[in-house]
Length: 89
Image 1: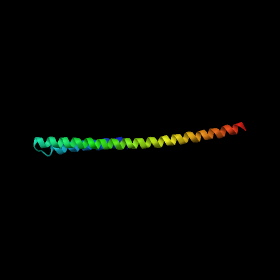
Image 2: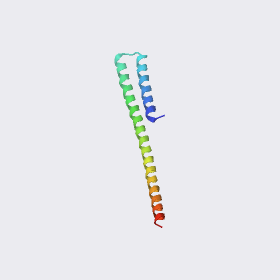
Image 3: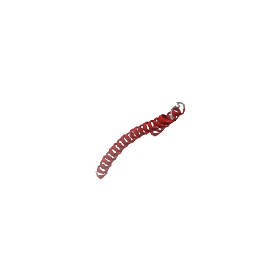
Image 4: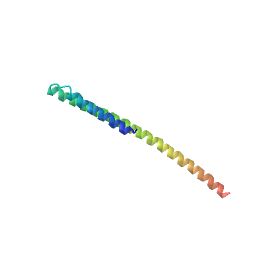
């Protein structure tokens, strides 16, 4: 499962839970507005954390892939030099 799908699922679940919680727990309008603002802030923070985790994961995978590509290029260059020197003999 892709990390982005997991983050999207978590955010969607949080949003649905917040809406249902507000709808099924009636309160004074001012209290409800405060709750909505708090849930929105919490949702924003959770989304921000999820995106930071996703970006960190992508960055780590990029670094790993970059180092593997670099190693492969170095090994290929060494093999080409060996072949070239053997052909010169």
